[in-house]
Length: 64
Image 1 (cartoon, rainbow, N blue to C red):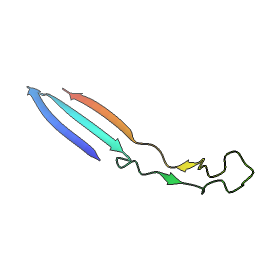
Image 2 (image 1 turned 90 degrees about the horizontal axis):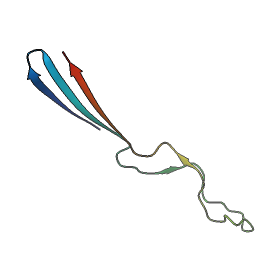
Image 3 (image 1 turned 120 degrees about the vertical axis):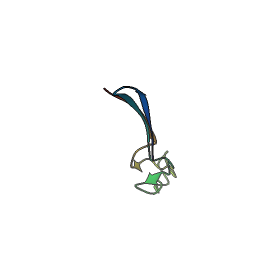
Image 4 (image 1 turned 135 degrees about the vertical axis):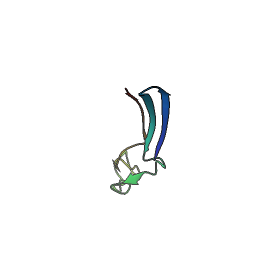
């Protein structure tokens, strides 16, 4: 998702504010199921996730 706002600051000067949200829903995707080895101390634990977490980026661009 990208939100953009363009602003004229007078003369030839303008600014652009941009907010970029990646993986906005932050829904996890797991690579493997839970560890199925009963004798493991990590039994039932999910240890790996695919993709990336939610990332936010703010940008200010000045043009003159």
